[in-house]
Image (cartoon, rainbow, N blue to C red):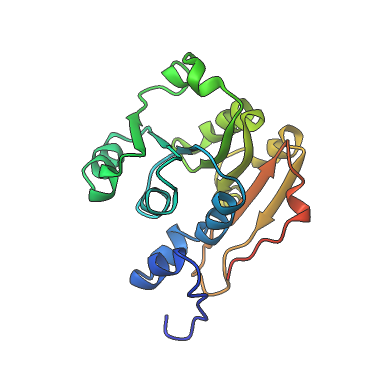
Length: 200
């Protein structure tokens, strides 16, 4: 950790510096920080965690709401009991079944005005469904573990290229131990390939 060049201007720097494991599990943080800086508004988080959830709770303004959906009951209870969940702009829900959940019935979640949607939920093979159903409802979407299929996963990431107009895969930093998860930036509204993205 001592040889890593940090960009201390970034808020995610503090998450990486405090715990070496965050380099792996939070490899997406620099991209997530840039996304919520470029696109202001309410954020959907599919799958909670000790990197994305506290970072978004801390980074988003009080005017912007964070809606977290968690399938795993242990993770849901864990995050719900964390102090950062007390932020008034954070709403977290336990989802027992994705397909029949309220997110597909409530008009509030059907709106097409979400700024950023972060995809990192379980079961992994379910992620492609939320990508398909929500890609036209947001400015930009980030997909964690985008190289998981090449490491034996069954996420069906090849379908993303048929669903999304713009797609850019960002590898993890070189310092991230193997297996290092990459992050995909996708959108049907904005040409993200013309934007500068940095993992520093």
